[in-house]
Image (cartoon, rainbow, N blue to C red; front, side, top):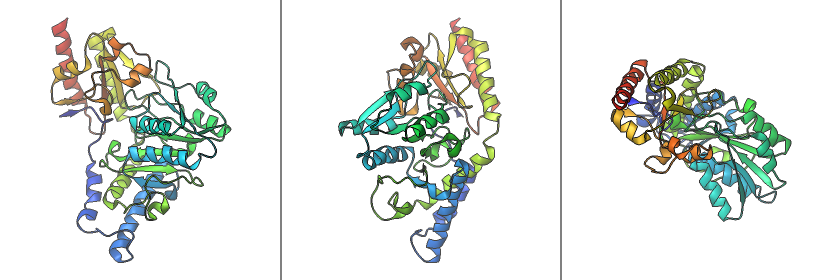
Length: 374
């Protein structure tokens, strides 16, 4: 399999899997227990928490382990809504967010909250001045993704955070796609909340984390015992917590590697040689994730094109959450991409194990397809 769908999910890193094994077979204690097995498990959880914190440049007690990106996003949106209802009932987000943001917002709308959906330009970027025009004295939260899962476009998070601070509004970013690919220093970004999804980071599915800036308290999504210092009830998932900690440690060490960016540029440059002006890159050319290419093949249908290059090539015709849909991507639609262009879009997302040889194989197949039709 030639896997070019790393934005959908990543394989578990071998070192991550090895780090998990002792807690599968031997160190199976409950971190809340006071005996040695429990204390060893507690130590492992706290070490993992510290590793996540190191990647984000925050303190360990600002990290809450969750079941993944969706839970982290729901925790912030609903938690802020419930906690700050007396202050206001207005939340601002964007038209291109992941469903794990948009659907909680729609849920709150049914409860009487007002949600504003910020538009984006043709490159998929929000305009900070447009955001400020939406702010009212009832606004309690702004949530804008760090990088888009489909196009890879990176939002001006630092500028948005300045606007939020100026108006004393809490700010959350869904960084599921950016953590481990680009720097996510929460202090430089200026965010109050940040979401991590482990399976985008070479950890297993079913684990995530939420950064909550020190001094901020919100109503928990899950009520129960006082796990995670009262912020998320439920016996700690020691095995997966350890996995996420190890994945973050590896990501921190490899964060500034240019290998993936160089491979993505190589792939795109050679596609341009083959197709010329028959392809269009969707999203911002420069402010984008180094691994992501969302390319529209003019005159083609994305799913048909993928079937032609072979079942052993894994890529996506949109975000993974919209796989199988016959309608065009909501993200591309929000960017104003014409239907004929959007239906030919294919997302290639490279990762840690992508090789030049694999890309050359795919390029050769594209060349053969193009030659047959011209």
